[in-house]
Image (cartoon, rainbow over all chains, first blue to last red; front, side, top):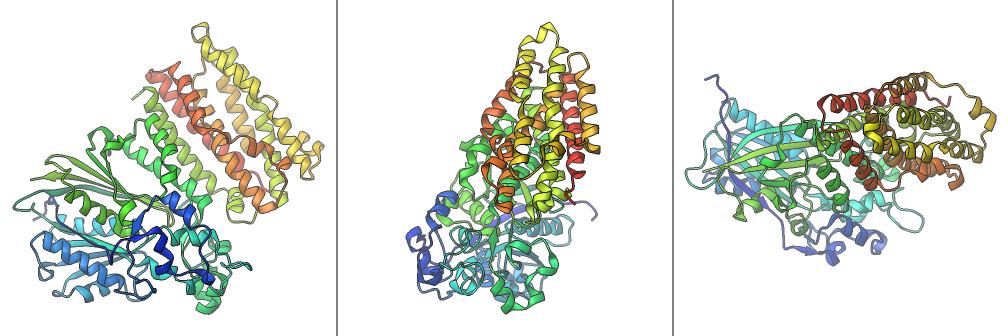
Length: 379
Length: 221
C-alpha cells in the first residue's frame, strides 16, 4: 500500500456559542476599559463589516464554556454529519490562536473534552492559518494511509483576552484612559466559535463530499515582523529577547506585552503580499480563477476590498464577486475557526453541485502567511 | 501569456518580491522598527536624490529611441519626463527643511546601488524601442505611488517632522488606481508580443534588484 489515496471531507461541523450578539451589546460581554465605551469600536466595525457575532462570555463577562469544549462540540457535529462518532476517530489535528492553557497543547485538551478512545494527535498554534496547517496534517495522514478517519478542527475563545483586566494598569491605556488602537481594534473584530471537518479515503455513501485537491501554505515571515501578536510590547516586538516571559507576567502586563495587538500600517503591506502570493499561484497554474465555482475567503478588512479587487481584475486574477461566499458579517471573525464555520454554512446553503470547485483562502496577518485549499464536490 | 493582464500579473508578483526585499534592508528595518533617526532620513534623501535626478533623463533618452510606429508611447514618456524632471529639487528642499546642507546633497556621490541602477537604466534607454523600460517604470512609479507615502508617514511619526520636510515622500502616493489604469494603457501600446512581454518583466526584475541594492547601501551611521 504505497499509493497515495484521494481524501474526502465527509463531514463538516460548526459550533457558535450563545445567541448572536448585536454590535451595540459587544462591550456588555467583553467589558469596558475603565468603565467607558470604546471610542474606536464603531470605526472598527465599519472596517471589518461584522454585524453580529458570538461570545463564550455571558452579558456579565462570565465564561459559558472553554475553547477546548467549543472545539470538541464542533468535532462532534462534524462526525455526526459524517455519520460517525468520536470512537471512530483515529487522528485529530487541532488549531487555535490561544488555547485554554499555556501548556500543554490545545489538541490534548480538545481530546480530553471530546473523549472517544486513544488517538494520534497534532496540535497547531498560529492564527487563522493554523486551521489549514491542521487540515494539511489530517489530509496527508489519510492520503498516506496512516489513518482512515481523521478530523481537523479549529477554535477560538478570543473574547476572554478582550476583558478590561488585559489592558487596565498597562502601558496600552493612556493617561486619559484610552486604549491604544492596536489593541482596541481587535476587541471589535474577533469573536468566539469553533469548526471542524472529517476526512476519509472514500466519499460519503450519499450526498456531496469534498475531495481535497491540494492545501498550500506560504509563510512570508522571512521579510515581515509580527503584524498581529501577543507577548511583546508594540515598540519591542521585533526583539525575541524582549518578549513577555523574560520580565515575568506582572512586569510584562505593565509594559503592554500580554494583550493581543495589530499593526495597521504593516497590515496594508501584508495585504499586498497576500495578493502577490495568490497571483503567484495563478501564474504557476496552480489556481485557475475561471475554473473556480465558489470562493470562500476569510478576511476581515472589508474596506480594502475595492483596491484589491481593482488589482485582481487588472491581473486576470479576480474570481467574480457572485462566486464569493461569506458569512463573516453574521457569525463574526472567528480566527482559525472561520474557514470551517464558513464551509459549514456554505454546504447548508445548497449552492454546491457535483463537479464544482471550491477555493478556500485563509490569510493570516500574525507574522504573515496565506493558505489555499482547493476542494472538488463529488457525489 | 503575453497580454496586458498577464504581464501586469507578473509585474505585480515582481513588485511583491521587491517589497519583501526592501523590508529586509537595514534602512527600512530601522524605519519599521522605530529606530530611524534624523541622520537616517538625511542619508535616505541623499541616497535617493541622484537616482531621482536621473529618472527624467533616462525617460527622455528612451523617448528619443522610440520609433514612429509608437508615437503615442513616445508622447507618454515625454510627458512623464516633463512631470518628473524637477522632482529632485523637491527632495533637496525637504532635505534643507530638516536641517540638511544643500551642498552636501547636491555634491554627494551615487552609492554602489545607484551607480548600478543608473548605468542599467541608461543602457536600456539607449536601445532602439526600449519597451522593456515599462517594467522599470512599474517598479519606480510603484515606489512613488505605494511605498513613498507609507515611508513618509513612518518617518513623520518617528521624527515628528513638519510636512515641508516630507513633501517628496508624501506628495507622491496619490491615486494608485489611476496609476494602474494609465500603466495598462501604456502596456497596451506594445502588447501582446511575447518578446516584449518577457523583456518588460525581466527589466522590472533587474530594476527591482538594483533599486533594493541602492536602498541596502544607504546607511545613516
